[in-house]
Length: 313
Image (cartoon, rainbow, N blue to C red):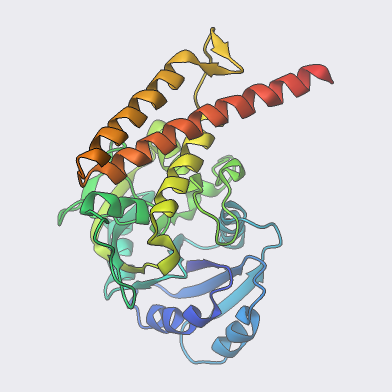
């Protein structure tokens, strides 16, 4: 048995088409569709109940009360431990023909433990902003590492949870692999990072990961993501979480912030101002660097503040 998991929140209108496309997929082994409803307040449950009555691969659902994408993904893992493979797809995506079969083929032929594929950003019916350069599409989830299958050995060729599959054995005891809830994203929030943490942990532990170019999904970009403030907030939140949880120890700090981080943020700010005055197209990318640097500073401060509160107890 294979499980396809959809973690969803208040996107009831997208579910019928997504599930219809999933049911069209060809697969050499039986598969089910699992919807993890993360406390939706719209008609998600009614839509799911209606979809369960339609012929095709079985559909089941659970409600995850803890709000946030890591909790929903971890619930999907717990619900799928009896399956052979677990696939993740987001509720704002649609699979292309061959999505399922191409990944299953790699699992069988290469004995992979994790397979990820291409994510294509689709701007429909919304229009792509003029400032949204190709190099920024990765921050909307786009993944394209070329037309050839390869084994992933370093962080330069990541695969993300919007289009990823696992051999469920990697999650079974004594394994402790789960999505890190510290990198939470609730509802329509911005930023997360639990899938990036999982990816980097797999790299460190030597988990066999493959990129599959035939495993393709279309990611339909919502209008609220096509604002400059989205990219700035995304980088601030990413920087904050890195500063708070991953930045390590420094002997000399001010309120927990090492001096080089302050200098780095200032340098990025000056570069951004210079590019803005020149009306350079790279201004936005540089402004995102500023936001990330400021986020790291804030994260370091939060880590210091938490330690101070702990010492006072």
